[in-house]
Length: 151
Image (cartoon, rainbow, N blue to C red; front, side):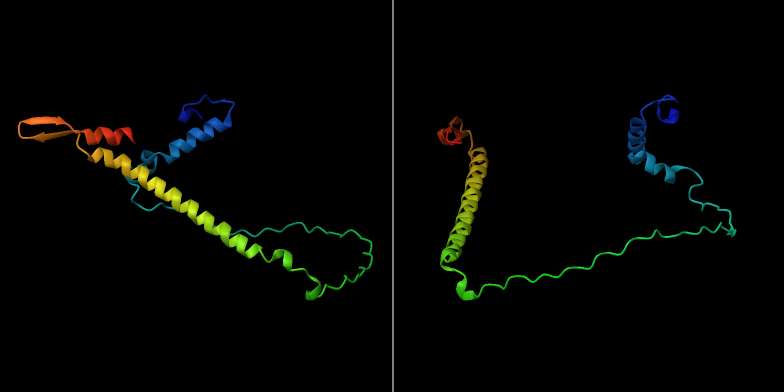
């Protein structure tokens, strides 16, 4: 805590963690490994050996549960035949869905056209010169002002 600027007994761990995360994500911090002299040599590790250990054996007894009751079987009502289903109510739904999707496409096309025209006129007015010069005489371009009025 003290190394990153907090008091040793700072009560808010989240602030300490956030500051440490900011410190670790700093490019200077991550680049220090390459700058420090001797960091190009491989680290030396001590070899360790596995030491076997005996664990105390614990007996586990599963609790005794009562038997589950037998499953009941029930039969479902038979499905109605195709002749019994009234399809006349739903015949117009396909045409309605196609019309709905066509209208969605039209709305999207109009929105794209409106955005294109808005972008075109925003850029278009900037491309029209403010002044027209002919030799030593210059005068204001009325087309630029008309374009800006209709923007």
